[in-house]
Image (cartoon, rainbow, N blue to C red; front, side, top):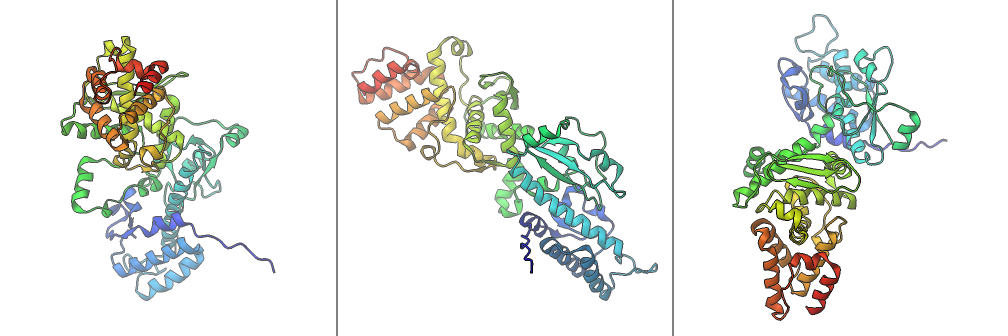
Length: 458
């Protein structure tokens, strides 16, 4: 006898559906509208809680066990008929359900659960399958608007999926396929940039997976919930929401008395090969190399910082964010004095590395960053050598990891850049008073042979 493999449960879909709470909608489906359905289970004009619970249990079993539509309708219709809530007669009682209504309940709820679960899976594999194709069934029951989208390919992070991720109407059977770079090129399909001018059916213009996998405010106490809803620092989903959250984060620093820029922060890609990021505290601008910018968008889509490349990208973002905190630099001197700029950049970059995990937590991003020394003390970048030289000097001065973080935080956020060289020389002389302070400290960490000489003297 042939043995068939055991079917595994669709965990994400089950989790999505089980998180819904029963909500009564006495008048119509619109009593619970659009994305509210992600967190609520309701059946229009069914006001008996025990009946809603019966329907919810039947749908939950269908999601978990893969119950067929025939089994679902057969079992539930008998149960509801016994309670007076099911009838196929024309003179049925108000609110009584029919076979077609049960089919709509079945298809809509299962599709929402399955597609939300699939969205989570697709996002988690988007780094290897970044192209998503809209897949309509293509039979006589397919809506014309959905059929027109069949085979169209958008990148996983295109705004199109915010509204057009299935299901896109009652009984919608559309789905999404993911494609690798190689597969996309072999299929020779055009990559879409423009979303269609029309939207999905009313009440379906949202992505159930994107709405579902957000922080659940119900898990927080009243005080914490008040802070979260007041300050709106939650998980950013795209660059505009990241700009808003970083602006609020910066303003939080300012409320503690730290000098900070004032204009809303903006983040833009910087085209070109071999470019580094830059910031303009006067305008609120942050510019990131295109590759870094794209990786930040990926981090926002998956809500996590996991790989070394993602750590590096996030570090550069926080480095540029750091330029919007603390006393402003003298731009003229920064551009003309390499020693002045070296010491400022080394301090700011070292601060950014120490602040990485804390910044990720503040933005509600899943973060696999260990404490600084256990993660990556040699993150690549323009300032890495300067940072390592500075850290080596601090170790020679008996400043350990904990004291280093306190010192660098104080210097970056509270000290004027003009005083940094003097501050570091004061630390050196505290241990070795006979070392001559005959050069700017920035020159010592910038030039290897001078740094090596200082290390020998220490």
